[in-house]
Image 1: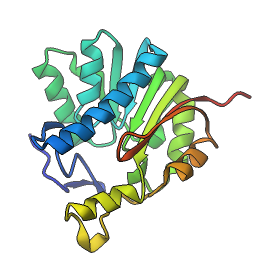
Image 2 (image 1 turned 90 degrees about the vertical axis):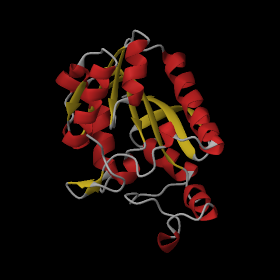
Image 3 (image 1 turned 60 degrees about the horizontal axis):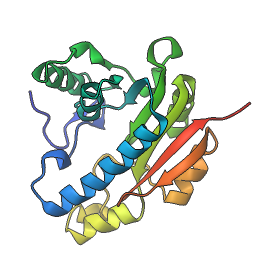
Image 4 (image 1 turned 135 degrees about the horizontal axis):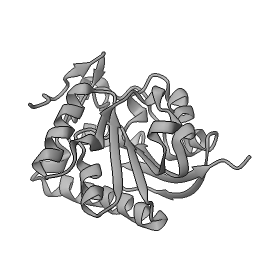
Length: 212
């Protein structure tokens, strides 16, 4: 099974329009290495016993963490994407039950809580990001790592490489746009921001639950 670029499920584009994880482009590889380095540094910093990646896609990160011996699981709203994640788990001789289909708005503490919640490149696709953040609040036991494209840099870089000209560089499916300052301000309403990284061209935050 393959997901074609731009394919939709429930009106939302699923998968990666551009498969950046398997690109042979050295610039793309440099960008993705910086993203991976930032994410891995945050994960190492908090040393979680359990991780739940919300919006896990095809399961790239969950499978990496599972191979490291971390108790990791992933969820995604798309049943088609989760089918791919389950297939990828089987291909790596890992438990397909690592993955489940779940809408981010419907996460419940009893089933979906973890020491560390990871939610990368998800909020920009959502019509109701505030509702999603409230849902993430419910399941974050200790830490949250969350990232979004950094605007207007993201769209500008797309324009420079000649992509999505008619939409001023906006990647298909991106309906929310935040600068780093705007994103920190939004997240601070729901979490305490502990640290900020800016791997080009994202904003990535390490957060903790707000103290009552």
